[in-house]
Image (cartoon, rainbow, N blue to C red; front, side, top):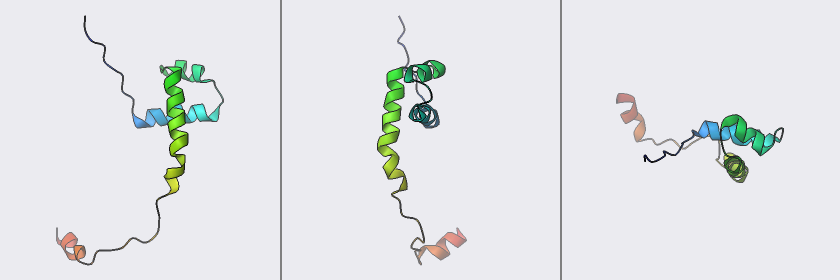
Length: 77
């Protein structure tokens, strides 16, 4: 018999399903059934989003250091 291929999901799909689970409007079973995903997988994506939520805002914003040497090279390339 042929081997079953694993389904792969895009990051945007995982985020959409995980955020829906975080909202808590529907149960994980309902969300899983609606999107064709196992409820345990929905819970894992929800957990991953919650664990990494703090790192979203860690990057510093503002002025970035400009490399004086790269300027003319970049202009003429």
